Length: 385
Image: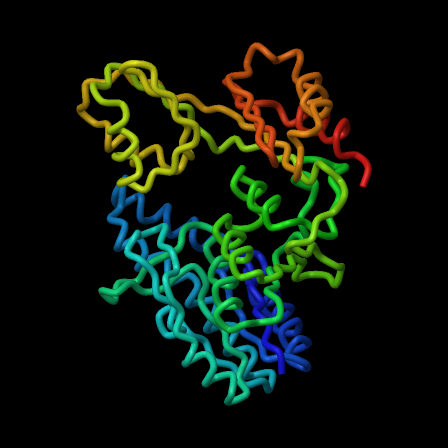
């Protein structure tokens, strides 16, 4: 019998009503497959835990944060297993470490280094549905670790690869990958398929569709991902080596970015190493003499400010927007860049940088850009399937 891995996000398991919907979907898959489920924490649980921790400390100890945040997924997994057993289907919940997921020791952004599937395989052989907590594992020192926000996607793909599953399904409240965020762009339409490379760019540019590292893993092990909705039976989007003919796949607006400008730095190159050591993910990095300019995620601001505290730097931190148009071979179509620039012609004085690569055109703006420009850009470039 084939094995499938099903991952359910926080909105899918947010309450007991939704857990029943999830359970019925699992039972349907169990008719023809061995089933391993990966679950996120319920609803806004992780956000609430982070908020409570930051009421105690502006920059909480990262090891202890991993211990705290891992509890959310344990609640979801145990509740789902309780429900499945009550419905007459043998099920067992396993934490990341019980499931044999080993990671490095980069707290809050750990990477999976090995998976020992023996416990999961034993439970499957006993006819059980295995429910695994997403987002977490254990390092070589037996410390609980987490994979970063959205890391349950990576747990699911890693398990699917280790178990040699047929498919990895990622279920959420959205029924696939769209040409833009359907909550912001009314004419956004769903893609039937997309390549790993294109999906990696979409995730990397800030679209809240899939964890970026899960796409890297899927491509490495050629594990097809199907993204679909928990709450309907509509056909989702398949992410694999296949490509559609259309050049533009998706447009992403990312307002979760800060532009950092620092002057009076004696050794600007050394600053890069400090940022890496603090697990602060940087975007573009420009050095001019004793001056450095780079982008970071807003969530890393507190860590950056602590790192730069009491240093004799001239520092400026500003909120900016990056809009990215993603599609394989996009750089071979100069007419697309022309269309993009035409949409932003009345705010071109706010353009800080234009980055063109094989699969992406990104524009960085010096201010938060109104959502109307995203809609206009979509209408001009992506309106037709």
